[in-house]
Image 1: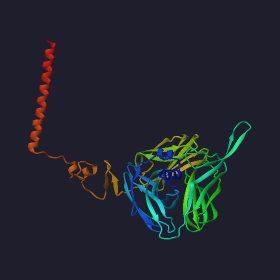
Image 2: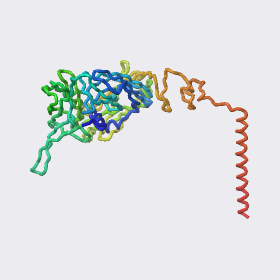
Image 3: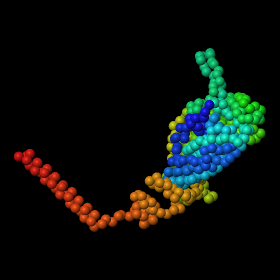
Image 4: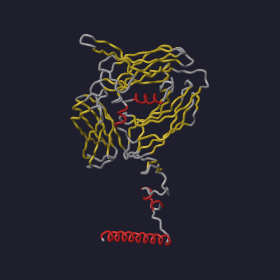
Length: 455
């Protein structure tokens, strides 16, 4: 079965929360183009790639998480991955160049080079991809390929048909939006693996349960899967026991003799009270002591669409050893994202500082997110009219548009009124007099017409 574009979309949705969360708070950040040094590669070679990240917002974004993945198109599994932090100044345009090495044992076929960007809250912000082809100069390859259903969950459900009659079934959950698992239900994760390589594989699996609210690893288990012969397929299953409500990523990573081969994941939503901080909006990045600070937090309730009453948002502000605490109580959380505002006077200069936000109820912390701010010096920015301006170059565009930067330089033609010759000025005066005479003539005709009608 081919790995289509819609499968990539499903894979991205499983990485974190449901798609509506990513749409609810969407910073003005996007990718512009992706390139690789070649279209075709041999296994074991390096892929050199470039992309451009643009921030059209008037505020900076720090604590962003950028990943570069090679995804096998046949089953949507990640075969190579690397990641790191990135920060964007207001209106910054950042060129990103990176390389990633293809494993020697990689199976020939079509792969996707994917850049993905996530916010400090773990919400997907943007992604971009392009296709490459991989061939192998070797006759030996390793490939544990997931089946068409990928990784899925199996949960027992009891349906009450009548007062005295009930029926138990096993429901298969693929992590799509709206699928909710009752708290304390036994959960089994299952997947099919096929050995499409030329060698038998001794396989191990690592299953990690990760909270999409706090990014905390709740549970990690390792399993010896035994030997999978070339051309053989087997189905494997493991038990899970997350005991708290929330939304989780269940990540299955496959190894052979401790060497990473591939991974896939599925989303699991356990019913119960919870909440998520989607993002933080501010009117600007930096504040002086005593200046009014206005913070707008974007929040959402449990993924099972239930409501939470009496939640509290607590924030702490830290800067060079000083700190301040603020909170807002009586917050209601539901399926639709909402905004909660917190305002205060800056207790000290906020130039290089951190905001720690916690969404909680009682002693239970639903979500915790840290936002850091410091002076960033971009190399290039987006101008008001959407052009890319290199800040290291001071010059005039001479394109008929007067920008603030050109006005500051003081000698750009775009910002200088053009002087007309005396002949052109005389033509302008004659044209003006003709317009005035024509206007008087029209008024005279109207007056005559009115007198004739009255008679």
